Image 1: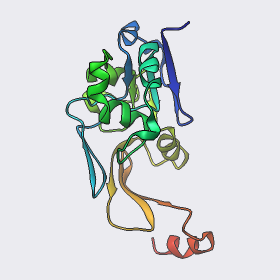
Image 2 (image 1 turned 45 degrees about the vertical axis):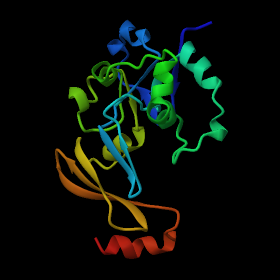
Image 3 (image 1 turned 90 degrees about the horizontal axis):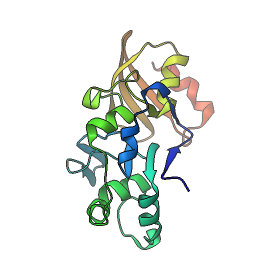
Amino acid sequence: KTSHCLIVQADSFVVNSSLWKDEFLEFDYIGGPWPNKIEINSNLTLHLEKNPVGNGGFSMRSRKLVETTAKINFDSLNFPMKAEDVLICYFLYKKMINSGIRFAPPELAAQFSMENIENLYGQNKNSVFGFHGKHLRDFFLKYNLGELLNYKGIKEGIENTNYFIETDKGKFILTIYEKRINTKDLPFFIGLM
């Protein structure tokens, strides 16, 4: 039997194995920290001041946490989101604490993993053991737009997902054309740029 399991989703990886700390094993849940507030949509904002530790894409969980969550009937939960990391670390946070689950402090979680580029708790891609969100990093390496410094979602627009992007080589707008756009229309949209 093992004491912990490492969760590594398809868009996650170990950045630097030499940054492993045995201290990570002192907690039941450790994942990259989230900002204090995340706006999911206009009707749902998560206020994460009580527990900013939660990203599950690259996380480590103890046997105790796994056994505790195995007892929950997730199908019966009535929350506006069903993402397991948000359920465990936000909606069910008090229940987890009352069950004796220990979440890593955000400063240590920032050394374990990162999900965003907001330099939470001083983290950067060179200071963390793991990373979640490989797709964004690959995008910038592929198109040689430079090192990602900052990004912000653009709320306007309903057909695509858009971001203001700042790299060490300049400022850009990233538009992710989603499946609802017909690929034969892409040349028209690219021509507008």
